Length: 176
Image 1 (tube, rainbow, N blue to C red):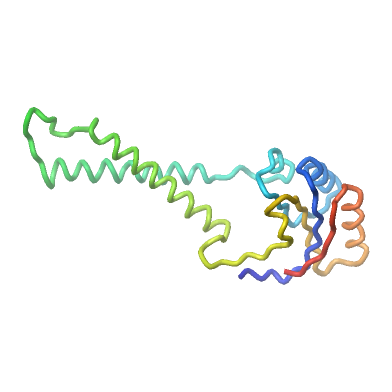
Image 2 (cartoon, rainbow, N blue to C red):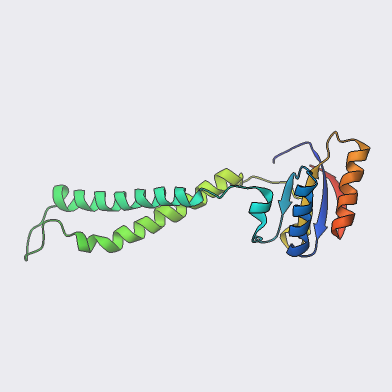
C-alpha cells in the first residue's frame, strides 16, 4: 500500500461541468492542485490541468511491431530453414499465407504490452492497494484534491473558501 503521509483537503462535485469550471478557477487563482479524480474520463480536463498527451500509443506501436516481427520471423524461419517443403507448386516463401497469424500476433503483443505498461506506470499491479479519498469518486462524484500537509490555517481557509465559491457538494480532509 502506498503511504503518502499527507493531509489532503478535497471537494466533491456532482457533475463534470462544475468540476471543469472549478479546475479552471483553481488554475486562474494559482492554487496548487494535488490531483483530480473522476469516475470516467472528462473531455477537456487534460489541457486545463496542463497534462501532456499520453505516450501509451507509441508503446502500443512498438509492441505491435514486435509482434509483427516475431510472427514473420518465426514463420519465415520455419518454412525456409527448419522445415522447407516444396510441393504442389507452392511458393518457397508464402508471404500471403502469413497474414492471419501476423495480424493476430500484432494485436496480441500490442494489447498485452499496453496493459502491462499502463498498469506499471500507474502503479496498479497485482496486490497493490491504493488509498482512496472517498468511495463515491469511482461511482458518481468528481473530486479536486489539495495537499494541505504543513499548510497554515489561512491557506486551508483559502482552499475551503475556493470550494464554497465553486459549488462543491462536500468538503473533507483526509490523511493518507
